[in-house]
Length: 355
Image (cartoon, rainbow, N blue to C red):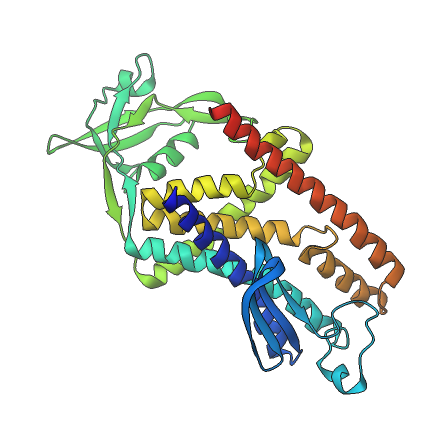
C-alpha cells in the first residue's frame, strides 16, 4: 500500500509539474506575468511567493494550473499591467503558451522512453517455444528451441520483428536461417492466411505459422542518439494508439468501461513500481501521452478549447465573442464533471468486481 501511494504521488506529481512547467516557461519567455504556479486545485496546503509568482501545492491533486495576468476574458487591468497581460499578447504567442503544456508532456514521454532504451529493456529472443500441430511451422520441420537468425536474408534480433514479418507475409514463402543446437540449418515456410481480431476488435488478415516464443529474453541497450530516435517513434506510436482508442470508444467498438481514472492510475502505478524503476518510467511515459491527447481535445476548459478559440481568432481576425466563450466554459464544466463521474464509476466497479 505504501509503495502504491508513493508511486501515485510521483506519477501524478511529476506529470502535472511537467505540464504546468510548459505553460509557465512559455509565459515567462513571452514576458507574460505569472501570478500562481500550483500543483493541485483547491485550498493551498503550502507554498512560497517569489517575486510576483506564488508557488504552491494545493489540496486536490488531480491537476494543476498556472494563473497569468489578464488570463480571464474581459478582465479589467490597470494600464501598467497591460504589457504583461496574457490577453494583450498576439494570438500566435497565446497559442504557443497554451500549446507548451501538452508539448512538454510529449517531450517528457520522449525523454522517459529514451532513458529506458539506454538503460536497457528485457526483449524476447526470436526463439521458438511451442509449435502447434497442423500449422506450417510443424509441417516445415521447426522444433522447440530453434533460434531464428535470419528471414529472407535479413537478420532477426527480436521476436517482435519475426512476428511482424510473418504477419505481413501470408501465402508468401519465407526462407529461415535457424540455429538448432549450434548447428545452422535453413528451412522454408509459408505463413497461412488467417482472420484475427486486433486490439480494437476489428478483423484483420495476418499470416501465421503456428509458433509461440520460448520466453527467453536479453537486455537490449541502445546508444543515446539511437535511443532518442526510437523514443520519438515509440511516443508517436502510443499517440496514434491512444487517438484510435478514443475514436473506437466513440464508435462503440470499445466499451466506455475501459476508461480509467485516478484510482486505476494509482493501482497501475503501484504495480509498475513493484515491477521496477524502468517499468514505472515507461508507465509514466504512456500516461504522459494520454494527458497530451486529453488536453488537446476541444472541450471547453481544457487546453484544446483555448487552442481552437485562438485559431478561430487568427482566421476571422478578431476575438471570439465573450458571451460564447462564457457559455462554452459552463458547458465544459459539465462535460468534465460527467467524464470524472464516469472514470470514478469505472474505477470503483473494477475494484468491486475484483473482490
